Amino acid sequence: MRFGFSYSLIFFFISSANAEVSAENLAQNCQICHNRFADQAQIASLYQLTATQIRQMLLDFKYDKTNATLMPRLAKAITDTEIDALAEYIANQTNEND
Amino acid sequence: MKTISRRRFLQITGTAIGLTACQTINLNSAKKAKVVVIGGGFAGVSVARSIRCLDNAISVSLIEPKLNYITCPGSNWLFAGITDLNKLTQNYHALQTEYGVNLLSEQVVKVDPVSQQLSLANGLTLDYDRLIMAAGISFDWDSIPGYSAQSAEIFPHAWQAGPQTLLLQKQMQALSDGGSILIYSPAEPYRCPPGPYERASMMACWLKRFKPKSKILILDAKRSFSKQKLFEAGWKEHFGYASQNSLIEWHSIADNPVLELDSKTKTLRTDFGDKFKADVLNIIPPQKAARILLETGLTDATGWCPVDPKTCQSVFQEKIHVIGDAANYAPLPKSAFAAISEAKVCAKAVVSLINQQPVAEPIWFNTCYSLLTAEHGISVAGVYKLNAEQKIELVAGSGGVSRLNDTNAAKQEAAYAKTIYNSLVFDSFGQRNSLFNG
Image (cartoon, rainbow over all chains, first blue to last red):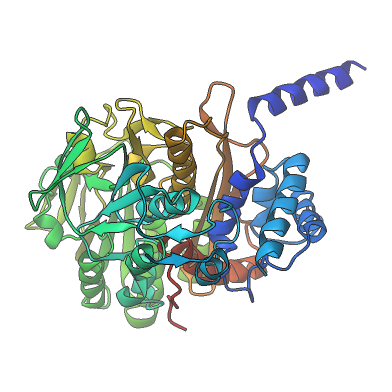
């Protein structure tokens, strides 16, 4: 009981220290590597992926469900709520233009 | 009047993500506000391009005296023969033709924050509503007596890519087998924290093949360095590090600082009287913000520019924003990736301020790859947000470096290093190039 309380308190401080950011502000960082002319033989293209696919890839990186070099270190910074919004945002952007 | 449809624009530029405001780029009608950007490196071109995409009623002028930009990222790869300067050379063509940025190939002589005007070397003056300074670094020549801009022509720093890089490469190639190279690595903060160690690795690749009896000594003003365990493990694997015949030696002189350079004897003398002599001296001097930032009064006692990270505004001048290596965004490192990330935060803040909208909550990413050989890459990454005190901090649990002793990952990351270089250049300069050999 006591531990549970401490954990939730810690969690409260962590989550309140860093405000959530918009999907657009996150996506502009993704774009630095994953832009349209990125070498798609090597890094995942974000185009033509559905929101569900993007969300699952990000969650797999975040929770170490897949073997990868760099993305797990980045995905761990993104909250699950941000991942949901980011996946929707990217999928909408690309679908609109393909 | 030239307009480009959104669809065409996205086909050309590949900037589908994150640019919802990029409906059409109207190249001629930009009257809402005047933004001037000083400096055509990664930060400067990214902020110019992003602002034009977010709100094409804002006019953006970019002032950069050089006609081309040779990127520092990738420039160490020259020493191993992985690339050449042509492949690292970017231009401003797409920025002008696709994004309607006005390019002024001029030197800025003076910035007057009171009249919001700047003077150019050709005698013209330019008004601004918002000024974004992305002018990069200058060298603190005074910190090493005997070293100067003149002696850098003999003992190159090669910390701004171009003729200096070629000079150092030429000196390396002219070494006799059994010759020595000394790399002096400064205290932090400086541009590209892992750069000196990647350089030693790339030089060692070449020496191993052509002058295997030679040695590289890294003389370090720090006690430890970026990605140290990964570099040292890789040096052991490839260059016999820590053995008698190691191609690379690393020596910290944190408690025994360099006092002077004796040019005649090619010797660095330290506080305790130690003398370090080599055939080739690559002195990377301590750094500070570029001249124009110092002269405009935007730096503090550290020599760098303090900013409000959320808006990128100088703490001294509210109409001036500072991004890239010149500014202090610590703990973000002074890397090209971080500079682009800062530029995107800055572009949004500037557009919001001009349109009298609230400034969004920022987030910054950093990713930085280094090569130890053409097939061995390592990386550091991090994501940064503002904390409750509005200071930048690494998001807890994120970031860090590559796994140690993972051969497959090292090979993959070497390929990523080259791929990501191309992506970075495309995302900032808007150009698609093939930028490495083989």
